[in-house]
Image 1 (cartoon, helix red, strand yellow):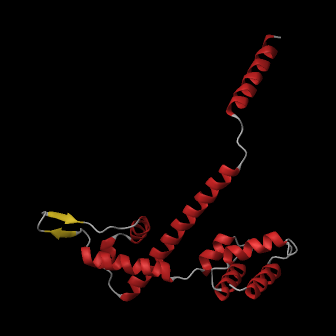
Image 2 (cartoon, helix red, strand yellow; image 1 turned 30 degrees about the vertical axis):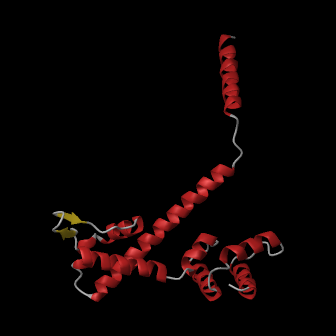
Length: 188
């Protein structure tokens, strides 16, 4: 994303959501640029247009990144998963030397995506290309949701880490003081 495309993005956001972002706040505008500069500008603008037309909610950076990110990433993951399923079959590949069944090494994202579509057998038993295309979209959506969840958890952890920590001793002293005050009031 170029600086010119970023200016167009900020203007688009202001047009769809007036008053939500302070254009004069240079730090916020610069932060948005740094977070989105690695994505293609046209894809970011298209993502914001799509989100604004389908929802009244302010788009988050994570949502914009998800919509604007190249789909080759999840498409390639789907292709790799289909290749592994076809190579190993639904139950793994028989190894005659060790007399065991070898299982493919699937990532967590691949396992979650396969679970969403009904497992490896669903790919092997798909009746036509239309069904495989539907499974591909379902698989990719599951992977995207998993990534979004992981990012949300990471951000939540980071925000908790940045909160000022109360001294545990001070908290215990405060609790003790409240208990003593309540006990004194009950005696009276």
